[in-house]
Length: 240
Image (cartoon, rainbow, N blue to C red; front, side):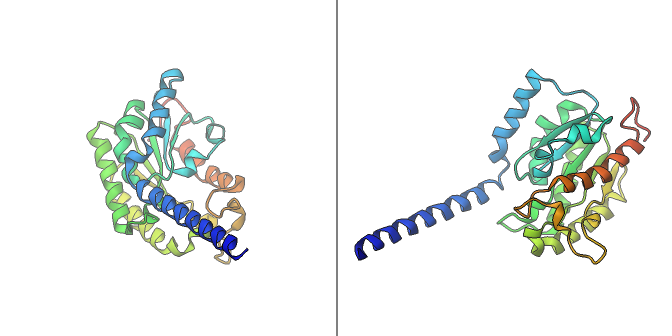
């Protein structure tokens, strides 16, 4: 009986070590943009069979966009293209810009990324997030994409409370930068995620404490859609 328990314990130990090793591999590999090449290729195949509208507003970034099931409906009558992939970092969006931004000639770009940057196991500073955002903008302009870029603030989450200070710093840096450049806009969604006592609203998140709930996406809609409508993207010609 004792030998059996030892065998079972050893097996469990090996399984735990293997699981830990796999998770570590995923965390390290996902920091490399090529890790997401399969998802980008899927977008390209979809573009062939179901071409996206030209001159739409492009939503690009990470999980919040990928999991936004009602995005086209929520933004109506603003036509949108939805290109969220994995745990995308801003540098990953830049890397894939020739494949998932440039071909669409978007009228405007809504960027929702930055949270994964600060969660990278290699360590990323708020200043790095700002630098990567600047590189994205310069890459787009160099590619002839003059569309306005709306940076949606990095949001908090119950599972990453310890990273919120860094996220606030990154948001402030990007907000200051956007004030100095034409065609860049900062969209604050983070502030509305706290109640009047300054407590993060748990109802905005799913059980995992990371993903947004239906109420979370409703908050995004209430914040982003009026901005796009006011800018004229629900009409044939934008007002700005």
